[in-house]
Image (cartoon, rainbow, N blue to C red; front, side):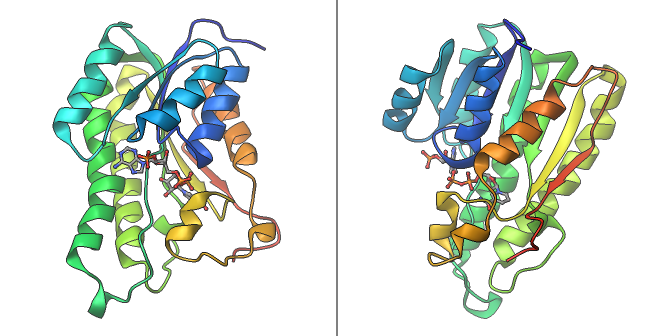
Amino acid sequence: MSTPSKLALVTGASRGLGLAIAEALSERGFHLILSARDQGTLDRVVARLPNSTSVACDIRDPESVARLAAVVRKSKRLDVLINNAGIAGPVQPVESLDYEIWREVVETNLHGTFLVTQALLPLLGEGSVIVNNVSVAARTAFPGMSAYNSSKRGLLAFTETLREELRPRGIRVVALLPGATDTGIWKQFWPDAPRERMMSPKTIAEVVVGAVTLPASTNVDELVVTPSAGSL
Ligand SMILES: NC(=O)c1ccc[n+]([C@@H]2O[C@H](COP(=O)([O-])OP(=O)(O)OC[C@H]3O[C@@H](n4cnc5c(N)ncnc54)[C@H](OP(=O)(O)O)[C@@H]3O)[C@@H](O)[C@H]2O)c1
C-alpha cells in the first residue's frame, strides 16, 4: 500500500542498511531526505529514487546538523526519522585502543544520534516515528569492540529515555537491534567475516518499514532481528 506525501529522513543513507531502508520507504511512496557525509554518493542515490533529495551532513558536527535541520524545516513536518548513520571502528582491546578511535565511534553513534534527534524534534508531531539503529551489540559484548559496544548500549538507553519523553506527544520511538547484516561496515573490523551467514540489508529494511507503517495506535519498542542460524 503506498503512503503518498509522508516525509522520511534517513541518515547514513548512502549505502548499507540506510540505503536499503531508503529504498524500501521509497517503494512505499515516502518522500525522502537522504543524508551522509559524501555528497557524490548521495547524488547517485537521489538520481534513482523518486521524490528524494539529499543533504550532506556529518552527524558529529552540531553546525552540520543545524544545516540539515534547516533544509528539513522547509518541509514543515517530518513523519519518519531513521537515525541509522554509524561506524564500528577497528578491533582493539581496551589496553591499546586509541583514544581518537574511541572518540570517533562514540561521537558518531551516540552523540551524533543525539544531535540529529534534538535538531529535528520540533518537526516531529503526533503520529511521527523515530527509528534508532542500535545493534545486538547493545546487549552482547564483543571483545575488541568496547567503543562500539559502549556507544550502542548508550544509544539503547538514549532511545528508551526518548521513548518515554515522547510517548505523551504520540511520537513513537523504535530501537532497531540487527544482528550481522551484509554491509561494508564489516571491512572496518572483520574483513573476512562469513558474508554468507549474514542477513541481507533488504530484510532489515522490510522489518523497519513494516514497523513505521503500523497504525499510530500501535508501538513497537524493539525490533531484534538476527540470523536464524545463530550469531557469528
Ligand atoms: N551491518 C551490520 O551487521 C549492523 C548490525 C547492527 C547494527 N548496524 C548499524 O547499522 C547502521 C548502518 O551500518 P551499515 O552496516 O549500513 O554500515 P555502512 O554500510 O558502513 O554505512 C554507514 C553509513 O553511515 C554514514 N556515516 C558514517 N559516519 C557518518 C557521520 N559521521 N555522519 C553522517 N553519516 C555517517 C556513511 O556514509 P558516509 O561515510 O558518506 O558518511 C554510510 O552511509 C550503523 O549504525 C550500524 O552500527 C549494522
